[in-house]
Length: 138
Image (cartoon, rainbow, N blue to C red):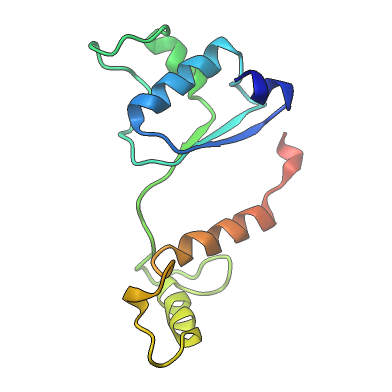
């Protein structure tokens, strides 16, 4: 937390199991690394109220403090490729993206055995996100 504060980090990405994510969020609260100036991305599949610790989990934060610290956070869901027919910002649907990606493989390649193939839509979305992210919001 001290390093994040020293480097004036404003967008913070963490990959944690939910128990560890709560510990990190509690520390963020105590170090005042939350609020409108900070955006936390938690990469994991958490319940809607994941930041509220269960009674058997002893954190140095109340449920109210955790809710306050979590106010400007984002979490991810496990959706590798959209199956609906809505075009994304790229102008393609998920199926069209997959067809274009598959066409780039050599004819004798099996997508199931191609390293990174299942995760490719996530990388593609990340590039679009970074490309369109407006830093003026901070």
